[in-house]
Length: 171
Image (cartoon, rainbow, N blue to C red):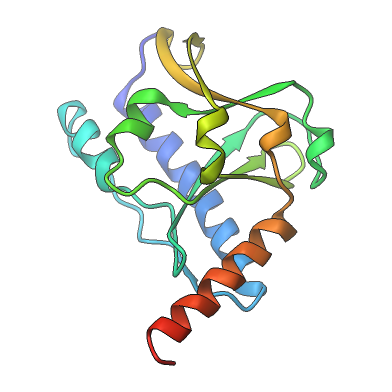
């Protein structure tokens, strides 16, 4: 079965719900965060250009990319069941004009989240893997489990960056 327009739209809608969930978690910590409105690329040929500027959750520290994971884990990074984690397609990361400051992975099974700071990029590897949903091989960035952080650690980082932003902005 080939990846269809309906698959793309369903995946984007589900992803946007997770984006809103993560933005709400961040705001509940007293940190400014915004989830841009849901929109779609209008054609397959536009997806690459669309990806370059796409932002899942915007904070004063930068963009947080949100990914759903069909794996069971809790808010403890040690609970992630594999030694590595697929971060993103290499083309998706490479195309982004503004690189995410962090990725947040939401377990579809538990709704728990884990964070992967963008500053760990030097530890990621590029691997060619089979994408079972799209039924194609693609290049992905893969990070070691040791790079994962708790959401509490992400909130602390965002608070620190927001404070620096407020000082710089004269607030």
